[in-house]
Image (tube, helix red, strand yellow):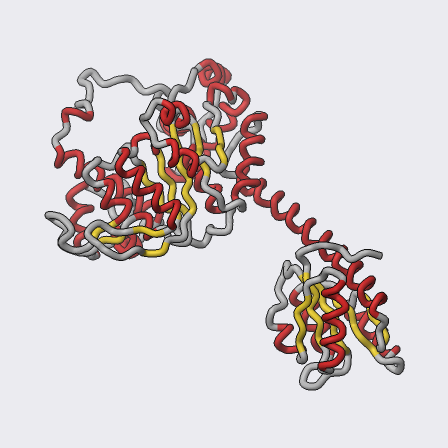
Amino acid sequence: MGSLKTNISVLFIDDDPAVLSSAAQTLELSGLSVSTFDRAKPALEIIATDLPSIVVVDVRMPEMDGLEFLEKAIALDPELPIIMLTGHGDVDMAVRAMRIGAWDFLQRPVHPRQLVDCADRAIKHRSVILENREYQKASLDIDGISQRLLGDSESIRSLRETVAALANADANILIRGETGSGKEEVARCLHDFGPRKDKNFVAINCGAVPENMIESELFGHEKGAFTGAQSRRIGKLQHADGGTVFLDEIESMPLDMQVRLLRVLQDRVVEPIGGNRSIPLDIRIIAASKGDLYERALQGQFRDDLYYRLHVAEIFVPPVRERQDDILILFKAFLERAAVRLDKAVPLITPELEQELLVHNWPGNVREIVSAAERHLLDLPIKGQRTSSPLPTHQQFSLQQKLDTYEKSLILKSLADNNGSMQHTADDLQLPYKTLYLRLRKYGIDKKTGKE
């Protein structure tokens, strides 16, 4: 039988150097990867769940014999194929090993073809085991994602499958969708169900950061780099090292910043403003755009080289109006969540209200449904009425008002991300605790609830 070509290796454990050398040569000539050990304990230290390996181990060895190794390795992974090498007089020991959980046993001296065939069968078995575990894990991921990306329409089911598949890809991803459709939630799922889930998720709205601040916000700065830079500041990209950066409204990023971001993606380094050192960076970039970024690139409004760097994979988040079957599901879910948060009873949803929800076009998408659910909980019309005096437009605010609004939004977001912890929020924003406290007073933010 030909050897199986696979990334699953063989751990061969025997205290006889001649046996180790001969077995390794036999297995490697058959196309298998082999790691040899002359003691059982060092091999045991690398055994872990989902280890892409099988084990061949001699029964009689000093310090830790094969049976002790078998018991401890099986405790770590009950489905790890372990082949025992026994002498002619060790039949009882072989039977005991099989009862403990050995996958097979071979009597010494072992014929090379017999060793290769047995290893091949064990590798095929291990490959199936690991593949099944991956399928199970993907299924669990989709179950978890379904609690975050709500709905039962065909488009949302397809979206969940795409997110589950791309979460572990660790590639840069471009998310496209209308305002309020849930692009950030998709990005968070990609992070939370991927290999970087234990590291930082840093969200930056490129359209909300004043143009004169975005460079410092992304790349950080050294002390004295410009007027007002009284101390060194770590940028968001460096803060996300090992994790994920979510760049929302990437189409709003100034062209000169696009050049710097492109270098980060190419060289995997970041240079703070005023610094002359390159800091290695390991991040995954997830960008989001309201419109077609490719069209903007064709029109010269976005760098095409950056577009291709970001567009390793693309996810489209459908608007609510194309998810008619999900409207009531979303409304009821957000209504229940709001009721729990505000400690109120869930109000009745009448047939008339259901009809009103279904005929509405939902231009604000999921974000608008969240607002409608909260309004219904407070016994208000689901569609808010305009005030008689319109709010001042963005252009009517002074620069200081814009900066204060942006600072307040950062504080509120950080408080929410850190579950209201003042100390963690201060650390996240790199502010002294007292300074954060004064900012909360300035903006009328309740430090207990983390809300205005």
